Amino acid sequence: MQHVEQIACDEKPLAYIIRAEMRPAKTTFVTPPEFKQQVGFIVYPAGGAIQRHDHRPLVRHLVGTSEVLVVQNGRCEIDIYNDNRQLVATRELRRGDIMLMVGGGHGFRMLEDTVFLEIKQGPYTGEAEKQRF
Image 1 (cartoon, one colour):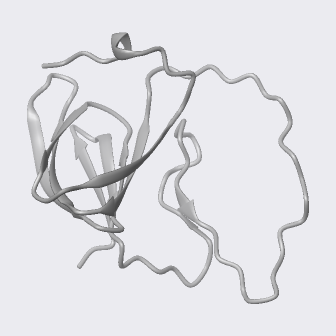
Image 2 (image 1 turned 30 degrees about the vertical axis):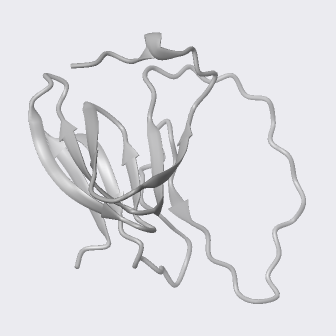
């Protein structure tokens, strides 16, 4: 089973699905550095440490909203659409799977009671951000 699947249309990335079984032995980012949302696994040995730090206040200009969902519990299907709202792929997501949307659109059907942890850029401006189709 492939642990990271990139779903694209016409070479434009739409989504990354990272399966719960992924356990890298070293620090591994699944997204390229130019993406507006970075997703990766940071690996440290026992006894390792992260030196205390803060983050400098940088001004960034972002267009669009990328979104990360972690399936905390349950099972669902995700439909992934291109920018023309055409269905590109359908995948099942299970507990522990991670989905990163970087383009296009998406919709879900719950196969079981499902709980997502959602991570996206803010500030959230409400339903006006979404275009339903």
